[in-house]
Amino acid sequence: MKKAKKPLLGLIAVAAAAVLTACSATGGAPRPEADGELAGGVDTERLVVAMISHGAPGDTYWDLVRKGAEDAARKDNIELRYSSDPEAPNQANLVQSAIDSGVDGIAVTMPNSGAIGPVTKKAADAGIPTVGLNAGMDDYQKYGMSAFFGQEEKVAGTKAGERLKEDGAKHVLCVIHEQGNSSQESRCAGVKEGLDNGKVEILYVNGKDLTSAQSTINAKLSQDPSIDWVMALQASVAMRSTDAVADASSKAKVSTFDTNAELVDAIADKRIEWAVDQQPYMQGYLAVDSLWLAHRNGSTMGGGRPVYTGPSFVDSTNVDIISESAKEGLR
Image (tube, rainbow, N blue to C red; front, side, top):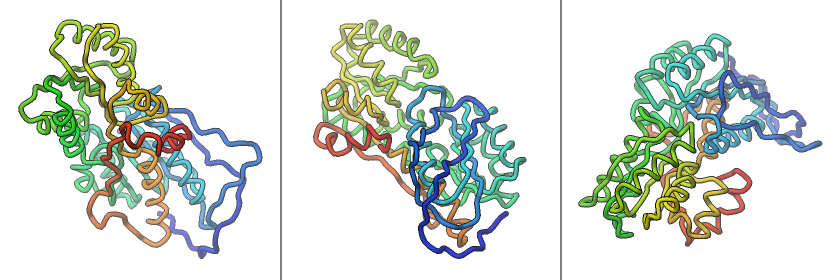
């Protein structure tokens, strides 16, 4: 494990963008650099950090995580290697490849801790600083990770359910777009708990095919007009849900977890009621920054507890506050 030896002399200007590699399908394109842009950074030793997520191609949520990671990498003089695969065995293989390549740190999501956790523990046991983000909060310490950045999904789901109850929802369709993802199951379980006496029905859709997902939601709404609320777990699925509601001539309202620029606009014009925000940019930024700190002075974040980035609600009362940041890919 490399350790930075040069003292921190202050901020310097550098004109190099972080080197980004993708070993498999990625959840979003690298952020382009403007010509002549200068970025601040530190003069510590150049490190290589791998971030491995379960993001599916086209899922804009992971663009935000990645942008946060890129910004931290640029500041910290880190070469960021981002890769992703929505299939747990393939994601585990990406972690193993990062170990084999001798990276200085690993940040990883664990939607399926049984499949991904063991290889993550191999990284930690090999002396590679390893942190978790987004998915796997319940098990991150079990597999040797020193920190975790995200939200407690059952808690977030419960708060969403309580909000739905306050809004008068009686029959909620909770749409899971990644079958087998424990975080999404926890969200829907929390929604059921928070809604209390209301009915929560789970609908599985193919999040990698949004046209198919919209069709499945449309069919369910057409079949059961008693559904009065669609609770999506991802911004893109939420946007397709609004189309499905219209196609089915349903009176159901739509809310979601997670945001992007398009969804923020949809909240502003009341196509979407509200969103539960876990701040993906912050998750990516803190994960990479924590690995730099681990090399710089042996720091760990969280004091043995997760670092919470959510949940918070975005609705018509505060959407204007974050609108510009969302359009810049920062929320």
